[in-house]
Structure formats: C-alpha cells, structure tokens
Image (cartoon, rainbow, N blue to C red; front, side):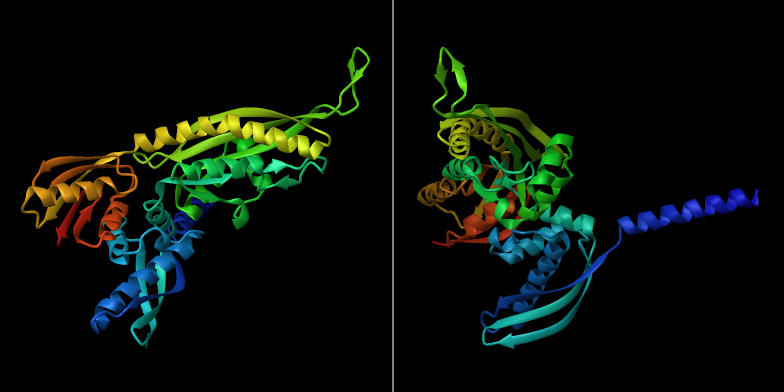
Length: 376
C-alpha cells in the first residue's frame, strides 16, 4: 500500500512539474527608445518602456519581422497589449535610463509568459502578408541538395507582390531548411508552419517541395529510327497553403495539391528551369484565387466615428480618404461623421493608416470600432 502511495505521489509531482513548465515565465533583457517631444520626458519614457516590452515579447517568440515594421505608433501597440492580450508581460523592472539630446533609451528586464507572447504577436499578423518557401531539388545533384530560391518561388513571389500582398521570402532568412519542409509536407504536421507564422507575422504560409524526373534523355531512341534531340524533364510540386482561422485561432489548410510542368533543353539543368517556368505560369492563378478568397472571407465591418465633422463637404472628403486606404474594400455612410468600413485586417492597422494621413488623431479603438478627432 505504501509503495502505491509513493508511486501516486511521484506521478502527481511529475504532473505539477510539467504544468509549471508549460506556464513558466521567461525573463529577458530588452531596450526601447522614444523621442522627447515638448520636453515631456515622462511620456517619452512610457513610450520607450512600451517599445522595450515589445522587444522582449518578440525576443521570447523569436520573430524575424519586428512589429515596428508594421505599426509606427507604439501607443497603439501598447494598447493592444492591454486590451487584446492581457498579462503578456507578467512583470518588468527598469535597469537603466539614458538621455541623449531629444531621445530617451530605457533598458528593462521583463518576465514573459511564452504562450501569451505568441498570442500577442499572432494578433498583429496580417491577412495579406504571406510567407513563401518552396525549395526545389537540384538537377543532377545528390538527393538532399535543394535550391531554396528558384524560378518557381521567385515568379510566385513576384505575382503576389504585383497584387499588393506583402510577401516574405523565407529562404534567405534560414529560418527553416528544405528537409524540414519535406518532412512537414509528407507528415502533414503544422508545427513547422505555426513556427513560421510566429516568426514572420503572417497568417498565410505557402510551403512545398519541387522534385524532378528526366522523362526522356537527349539521344534516347524514341522509335522510327529517331533520337530525342533534347532532354525532356518533368518537375513536380507538392504544396500546401495553410492559413490561420481568425475565428478559432487554429490552422486551416486552404488547399493541398500537386502540380507539374515540363521543359525541353540541351542539358538537364536548363530543361528543369524551363519546367519550373511552365509550372509557375500554371500554378500562380490558382494560388492567387485561394489567397484572395481567404482575405475576402476575413473582411469585417469596423465602425468609425470622426469628431469635428460639421458639413457634407468635409464628410465626403473623409469618406474619400477612407476609401483610398490600402485594403479597405468599402465605406458606407451611417450619419454625419460616422462610417462603416469593410477591412480584412486588425483595426490597429486601419487606425495607423488613418493617422498617417495627417489630419486625424486616434482617440480610441477596439477590434471593431475607432473614434477619431479630425482637424482641417
């Protein structure tokens, strides 16, 4: 009986230890800086601490793309921490503060809960931001040698960029190698994909692997006393488009498919290159359709109230301004100074885009509403 009791106690201790490990905080050092405006040092210090907190969060998650590349107004980012993901920074302590001319720099040590940090970073991911990684096996090389940047991936990135998507080429960052992608595609695992989403603040990942076969070799007998004048190479792509379901937060496979292209040339390398070009032309329209459907499916209605609108001309001017913001798909009049905007992204990006127009100050925002002050 005593032996059974000891075993149960050990199991309970093990369970508690695992649970504690899952919720364990990670403490890191980080720094942030901010401009001192009108000699207001306290406000600058607050903003610098907000930047340092985000640096600590990004350091904990391991992002390759920093939040400041998406959002310039860190007061809004600080509000996201408070309103959307409470408790990310469990505690922090200012280690040092220095001032140089009109800038203040703050160094802190911050204790972060990793799971909530990933959620915080994920909340800033863009639906129109895509990460692309499609390595291609090198012709004539050993089986484990890949070209991580190739004609197919470059062509696809170019066509997506032409449609105003923000595209991140994963290959140069060395965040993942081709063999990992090969394993992920074969196993169907989304763990590698989820990691890429955190690193690149993207809600859509296009991953795949290109292989090739020599269908007919140059000089090979093709019947009737004729020899094949070129190498005929078939390139085959196995790929997935994985996106985050913004309602459930889970990974959703938009499509999983195979495609192929063919190329003819004197040598195998050139034939494979021609095959990749053929494949890119066939594949691009299909991928563009899938991505566009996903973005359209995530459009939400955001209510905007603009203070200081007193006449119809000003109301029309503001409506035109809102309609010309990137990714805004529609603007409806509600009443004087009030609009319903159709937008596929987090409202923080809409708030930031409006603020950049120069005549607006953001008074308040939430995921589905914005309040602005307007001055001519």
